[in-house]
Length: 337
Ligand code: FE
Image (tube, rainbow, N blue to C red; front, side, top):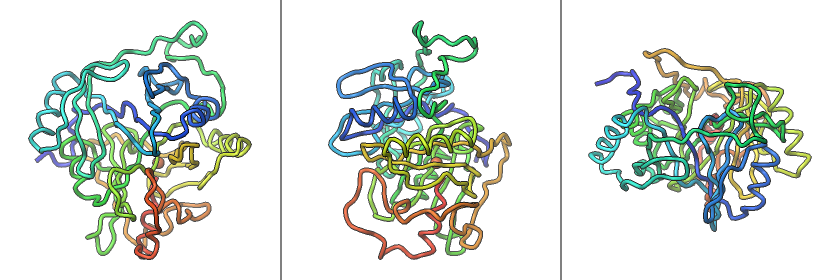
């Protein structure tokens, strides 16, 4: 048993592929409103990055019939770590197999989590080299801060919906080696509503939260980081001025202490602009568990999260699950950060 000590074979979240049925409008949202930089196009996909991301690309936008999440990529800590994870995941029966790697990356080992989300681990990474017009005067900044739109700095995390949270949390902690940071457990701790995990000091890079519609392989949200809370407030102005639907925030979660703003990009995916939160450096971190009473509405202060925050994910599942969801579970799921 490893206890709570991180395995350290997975270094960090590399990139997330989002599907969009409105590629031009989605590209406008991420490029002009969030201020991400498009760096490459191939087939039905556009690759983008935040100005502070060291990797060439951290978001892949792919044209598809429905919104949702495609391949979620994690960088391994070393070539040996990649081989170890591939072997362990294969032994667990979750392997899809090796690919030659996506843009800017070497060969990748692809697999599914227990819920069916497609993930991959890779090691070889092409460092981003800024073209002259994007060259920063700061030697340690990979790309000029353009000040376009919100100006998101880097990828932070993603939250996935899961039919059953527990096996997915176990998969992420035991097979990927992520450290469990916080949990929401109801019914005297027997019902796992959500789990927040990370392979880095970043509070969480992956969350699994109960899918109240009973779907599989769905996305709750994708999150980009800004340096301070003022940037989140400014994002609310920029998105509203451009007709983007803001679902929740700016406000503060209790779990993760995150300062959040959730909007829907034009393709339908929920996207978070995020700041605040806290770092975790303890190798023996004890996961923080919230019960019904402690959880409250899921916000530390600010407006209560709307029902859509619990029920909507991508791809959308038709029909309302609200009648099937007990009130206390709604509150729990509303804690998603
Ligand atoms: Fe979040």
